Image (spheres, rainbow, N blue to C red):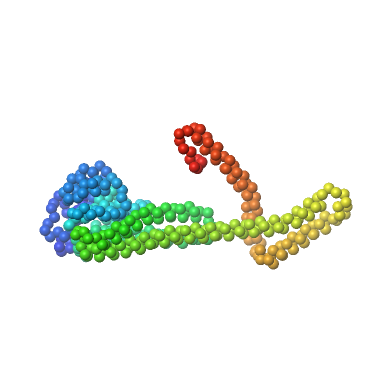
Length: 374
């Protein structure tokens, strides 16, 4: 268990102190910061009796993870807050016990927000004004403002996601899923934290002064902006997915249009070839050596007229030769892949029940999974 103490006197000087020494008469507030481990339970229970803290609340702070909340125990006030982790997109818990002149914070990991406030209190005397309740408000402010960094990162990320959506890039789904997961991890703590700060700004506890309630009101406004920003970010992700589906549908429409035009041109040509391919002796032109030339020219004229008609109707434009080749090639590839995809889908449908049945035969007491193993 790592413990450190910071004391502030009436002149606004915040200095390090010993936890075993009693606070002097000139001390305005005392901040005890503890980084706990699960094996520190008994030692913390003894510490809680010294500061008249609720033993069950202290035990829960060590073993049970909680969302932001506040509990009033009369002589002390428990405020659970969350901050942004330093290594990855996640939140960590800070359990704050507020008494008349002391703030005791317990955490299970390193806290960048606590470290920043701890250093600034010793270097900037203007931050030490007020009592322990205002110190807790400053800590809540730092923890909440660090969470807003998520929105700054999202604003930089959304531009790239929009570009992927408009180009119908297949990697967008994975990117959006990752961002949505990160936002959900933060959102689970943001809304309860805003509600906790809302309760503190209207609290009637004698441990919170009028000046402290004003500070909690300011932090509540920050938490409200954060919650609104998280919800707006989730909405932006949904709109990005809609744009991706629209771009994907547009590409599919272009491919379908190419295939339709290709089929419409080849259909009359196939009809002509099929007609003259019949094995009858009296077919017109079959005895003429130049008959195949006439039929070939007719087929060429028919192809030219069909293309001209599609251009006149606006179905196709007059792109460059390279672009036309690329579009036609993509359409032909999609057309060639379609039978293979249909066969694969049919095989998957027929194999899935067999896998489930085989699983049930191997272990009749174990319920079958809804999804086949990969």
